[in-house]
Image 1: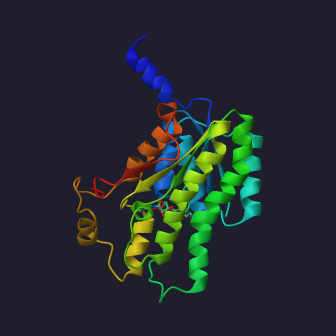
Image 2 (image 1 turned 180 degrees about the vertical axis):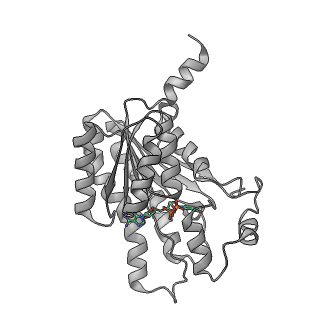
Image 3 (image 1 turned 45 degrees about the horizontal axis):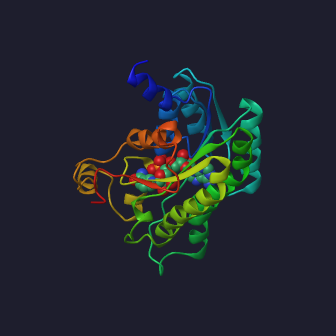
Length: 263
Ligand code: NAD
């Protein structure tokens, strides 16, 4: 057997099932693409049905089975139904990329209480809810890998981002708690921390701050050792590593994917 056969086997997700929340767009679609390229069957969860159906077609073209489920990750009932539907469809759940999120760019004085609730409900509560209903299915299958999307702002503060920093900081430490609780069931839990990635969310952040999402803005965001914006595929490759057996002893960790911005 050649060495590279071992590596490919560890990276392969053939026969596995991955759930990706926020899978209709941006980073979620990028990770679903990479997980599918490695052979996993995919369940895309999102509130955007139109983009979800488009994403489903895109992933199906890679030759794996894929379903789209409308799921608002803030809602316990939606998350429970989605977990049950994925298990009923595929008979197992091995990977969960907890990725749905929204950008809310305000300081504490300007931020309204309902905006705080919305931001934390989508990103942080949503990650807890899907984990709650999917972990029992992972246990049935003998283990799994959960990847929670954090941010560079899981690790440091940012301007006009009080709710965003709270939710992404929360993701990081919730990941550690889940790692401790579920390691005995062979479930690994890690955080991926992207820098600025060229997605509709980055556009929304720019517009919320009164800017225009043009080349000048993108060049400004790209000031880092690897001087470009990230792509959803850049983050998807990191998710694939954390989902695969290549990372079989990595849990409770965070992987920064930001072109060296952290340095
Ligand atoms: P995006 O807007 O392209 O995708 C987010 C997806 O989440 C959308 O499809 C949206 O419909 C979905 N979504 C929103 N609310 C939802 C809900 N209640 N239930 C289910 N789905 C919902 O944004 P993105 O940039 O791909 O962001 C994905 C994740 O990456 C987010 O958690 C975000 O905070 C994080 N992130 C993004 C960047 C960046 O620069 N783009 C950087 C760091 C972290």
